[in-house]
Amino acid sequence: MNIIKRLFRIGKAEAHSAIGSLEDPIKMTEQGIREMKEQLDQSIQAMAQVKALSIRRNNEKEALVTQSGDYQNKAMLLVQKGMKEEMPIEEADRLAKEALKKKEQALLDAQIADKEHEKLVSDVEKMQINVNTLKSTISKWEGELKTLRARVQVSKATQDINKKMTQIDSDSTISMLEKMKDKVLQQEALADAYSDIANSSKSIDQEINAAVDTSDAHAASELQKLKEQFNAN
Image 1 (spheres, rainbow, N blue to C red):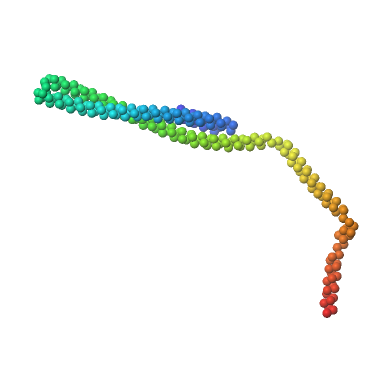
Image 2: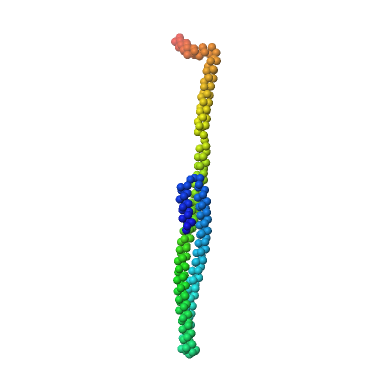
């Protein structure tokens, strides 16, 4: 599981790396995931081979147990033949002993096969745990890779914005603002100048009428006349 330790080191290094160097952890993580998937395939193949061997040894054990029973039955038949004088008793006994020897050897081989089968079953279980761990780790790092890619996109955008901000000349910006301020002041002064010119171009009658507003006096005279008419009636 060295690749897992390697990826954890990558993650730790990435956390302390600068924004510009985030591409390397992404490539390293992608490579690490590819290596883990290759290791997963190899582990599954190896586990399948061990499992097949376990099944084979178990079948061999069962066959040896059956074979042991067959030799037991043959030994019994030989003894019966000798007792019934169907064959020489010495020959029957000799063959019965050989059958019993083969029976014991078959049982011994069956025990060995059974122990090997149990060992292989244990190995398969351990390999299955490693395979499951590797699958889980791959899934985790694929999720981490998606997050890392998103972070790179955000960091690149932030980096571009910050770079553009640093490229702005503050002195030239201030100079531009001062020029705009002067232009606004000039436009305001020009508007006041036009207003003064308009006022100075009025005729003498306009000036007199503006100075003497007779509208109120005329209205007062008309009101007095109206009151006198009511009094006369």
